[in-house]
Image (cartoon, rainbow, N blue to C red; front, side, top):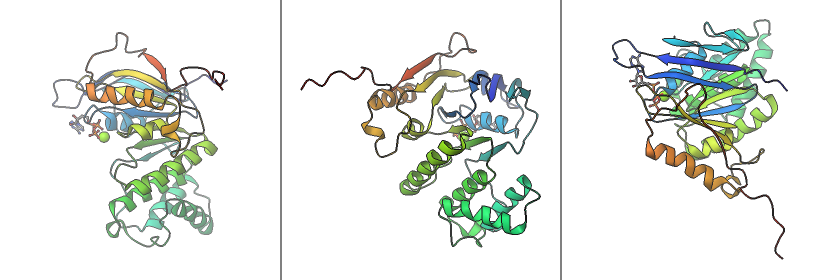
Length: 284
Ligand SMILES: Nc1ncnc2c1ncn2[C@@H]1O[C@H](COP(=O)(O)OP(=O)(O)OP(=O)(O)O)[C@@H](O)[C@H]1O
Ligand SMILES: [Mg+2]
């Protein structure tokens, strides 16, 4: 078994100029190859900042990020980002925005190859028919779906997502969550995703990192998702352990813990959501 982390966050700290105290400090955790990690924390604790550092778009004020054994120095095509607000090139159509990313990833591809590959992802996010539209002609949810298609189309080894589905209606969100489950099961890419949606984290994540409120935010705890693998959105709420895991995550959000774990290098790890009792003989 490969035990080297794909991404290792080592003592990350961010102090924005003009602020008296760092937004977060001493953030330590690992993301293993193929793992799906969700980050949950209150607004303003620094989740987007942390993700941008992993993307290489923002500099940490302290600490390092190690990706596959090497210190991270900037953006790279091994990582794709789905932003909290869609970041599309406004003068390009849906098709061109996606093709632009595909061409940067596979410069040798013919025009036909780029188009065919792009179309698969346009269809995947149900934007067929809108290929020629410019971002200004799209709804917020549609723009977000272009961002998702563009990120998935480059088949990144690492997918970084900042609340990718939060602006979508419930039906579209559910459909895209199902797609993410299916894509992750086949590509096994390493994924780091910020979400405010506890059910979404429970459906998608192998582990859920809980961040305290800032300033000086830390990792409060890491929760291992004990719900059975291969879970679907429809059956999620009926799984044994669902209530225990959900309540644990919601309690964390309600209580707004600002306390510091004793050793930030080793935040407490808890496994919740596994069936508490092994299957007992049916009384009948
Ligand atoms: N460029 C900046 N200059 C100064 N302060 C900033 C800057 N960007 C973010 N901040 C501050 O850093 C903190 C963390 O911001 P960030 O966007 O990372 O939070 P977040 O956890 O993603 O919040 P949300 O859940 O609302 O998206 C906030 O208090 C914010 O005001
Ligand atoms: Mg954010």
